[in-house]
Amino acid sequence: MTVMVFTFVLLLGNVLKDILSLLVNRQASLGIVLEAVGLLIPFVWVFALPMAMLTATLLVFGRFSADQELTAVRASGISLLSLITPILLLSLALCAVSALVNLEFGPRCRVAYKHLLDRVKVEMTNAQLPEGRFIKDFKGYVIYVGKNRKHELEDVRVLGLDNGSNVTTTLRAPRGHFEWDGTNQQIVVQLFDAKGVTLQNGVADFINGDVIKTLDMNPSAKNVAKADISDMTFTQLNDELRDVERRINLPMSFLSLTPEERRAVQRELAKERNDWASLIRFYIHRQVAFSFACFGFTLVGIPLGIRLHRRETNFGVAIALLLVLVYYSFIVVGQSLSARPEYAAYLIVWLPNFIFQAAGAVLLWRANRGV
Image (cartoon, rainbow, N blue to C red; front, top):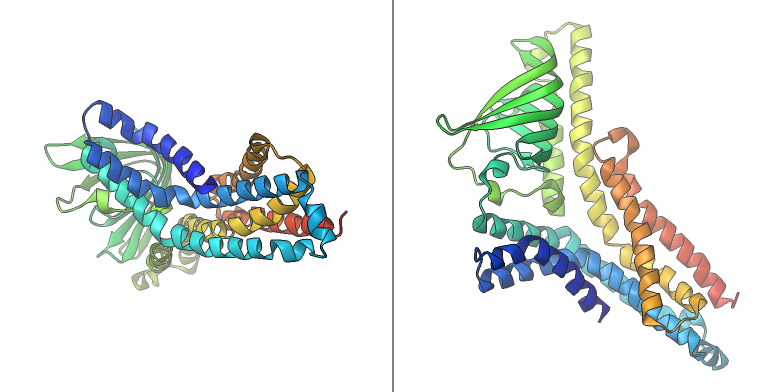
């Protein structure tokens, strides 16, 4: 029941934000709305399954303790650990289900959902340089845009490629701006305070200042079919990570550089490789870490429900939401640091699992001893 409730609540937020306005303005039919809702369900289960398991555990054991049933069970010679074994096994089974949803079905359905919305409302200006995605639609370039707010860009990273393999240019800019040139079918991107290096004919030229790049549109490019980094499956993220590590290396043709120049270029390329790889590693670890949330929430929920000794449903839901807020605050912090490899943000997402499981194990041990 809690799974259905949380699924409905999370669906409602997405429906009101993305779909309801299309339906009211008659831009989408009822069939499209139902299809969009169906595609959203696996995506919201990423969050709904752990939240539901925690809430259900708190409600059941809060009522169990308040009605003195725990005392009756212990008087019958049954230990708390024996009583909760099926629930712990259920939480592990839900971890497996969560892993399947987090690593595969959730991201695929999310991409299909966005694809569906893009077909209904074509936002050409933002679709040309979508944020949070490795854009490979422009020949000779791989581009990443942190934010795209009506032609104003933030956290822009550009890789210039030679024959689609060797890196010839690396650029990073805190902000930028782009305009659509419909006559020439080009996008003109201006990067402010850009830093990077260009490798040409065995010479390294370091860049520090404003840069203008002209990107030719590829008529066959299908932006809607591309997945954001946050919406990639586990396999796709691993492929992207290997691709980044393979691409950002010093080409053999630049071995003729002086040792000092070669070290400077290698440091620049290593920094770029770490920055790009750090983004991908964060989402890989986030997907896997999310899969163990059900077990950690169950370990905490059982002894906490017994200690709270309350049978009110609203009280149990409030405590569950508070614990969920604490858990996901670590994820938010990790995501804010995902572009800073020195902070190892991909390890931060594991902290709530370790904390909840350790705290739950201690509380469960104390509850079993009647402390």
